[in-house]
Length: 208
Length: 260
Image (cartoon, rainbow over all chains, first blue to last red; front, side):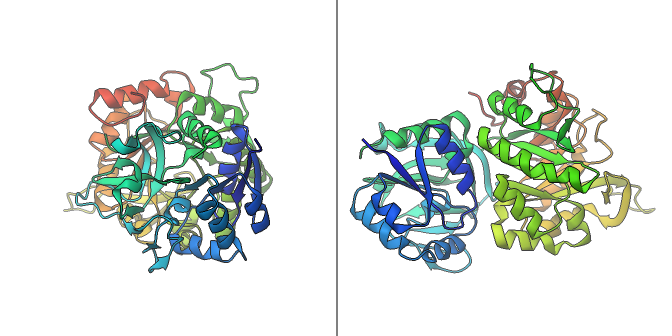
């Protein structure tokens, strides 16, 4: 089976890191801003760092891209992986630098982490647990482990069934969301050494 | 568990070569920063820091190539510092594959550069360096005082270190790299009072730096210094201790660290 991965280029900062990591696990990657390539891809990866607003505007700024993503992943069933802000963009809206609509594929809101304990630092930065939710045990891609997180905003998912994994930073924060073929990880698999590379390798094998 | 205390080895790079680098493994080219970064990636370092101390412009030019080659083979976060003075400098390093850039002297002369970089690329990618020395308090004052020094700790600025640190956080830095220039190279341990005073004054993470000689110093940096991450150079480079030893020392002290 052909396994062409479209890595979406919309000005997000971690594009090259994600590209390097996908290469390291043997993916056939096309870095692209071309909606036609997205329509023909077998799998789609949406990276993202920086602010929700900047990323949402960046993605919308690529002509035809949101339509192509919706057609190929949300409606067409191609395995999709959103990373960090690329995951947050799946939400209905983000509140960073003012409310901005997201793709709305997984209902929820992206909000600032506000710790009740002042000793808890924001950004949530560093290695932390990826703790699988009971209903998501045995998921073919997301497994229990330690991964590198770096974010100040978190995905508050409306439906707990869309949460695949949690992490703990003073309070529970969503580490991964999943709905059918749509997967998002708040952590950075491209920066999570063996655990991260193995997660990407499993994504390449995933047939949801 | 909660977020782990990060153990960060730091490599000084000058003109494309590592200065006083790793010799805990057999490397084909012990001066090659990429090979050394790879050794630390394999050893399970939580992050890596490259500090460029090149004296010349040409020397600095090699840094981008090092970062690019490192990013191709290392799958951990990499912070790059030394000579970052503008949004353009930051952009070049981030595009080459750095995850974060550390700004020091430039942010002392022109603090707004921190806000500009944060606005363009996000707070998560900007580390503000706080290079401080203890100064004798004015008569009558009991509280200790620290001053920001630039040029490798040689040039005083008259700027209060704690005030500067708070300013950096307000301007949008994602974390602070707090280095005691008094402690640097002494192996006598971090300046715990300095680290703690700053860590308690800001809501962003603080990396303790300068003076590590033992694993106990790392533990102290967190327990007494309230740091979220501990940076060290020579204790790792010369094979005295491994990254796993550091993780274990933190865990034995009841602190969250990787490797369980």
